[in-house]
Length: 141
Image (cartoon, rainbow, N blue to C red; front, side, top):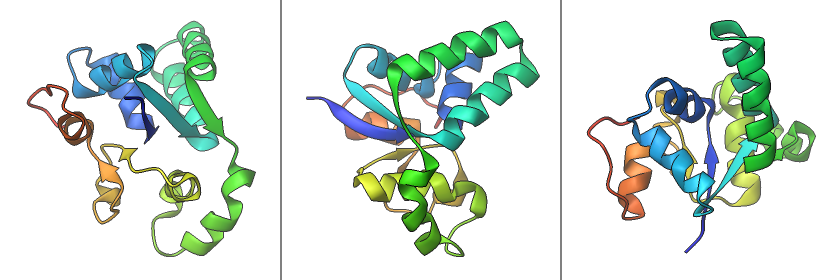
């Protein structure tokens, strides 16, 4: 069965920084074609900025290519109506992510952001893996 889920920025960062993490297992599922990764324009840009700032421009470029090839990137203008409706219900920094999830009717918003705790679609990488029957590591991320 092929799954589809929104992946937040932290999933990509934790996967790279902690290769023995649940986030890395989530990306392994993406790489194997078991999981279709959906990201927002904001997540795309946050990932690139992170790798430019904390690593090198060369690594950021490689990661940019990976995101373009392995993820479906939803432009912010495609979810602007949902963002307007959600404004004030969640922090502005999280609007685009949740708007994308709701617009596409996704079951999972995989993140390690506690701001999503009250969101029904929210799952940590560990919880997502457990829910789909994949062995998870001890840590949540």
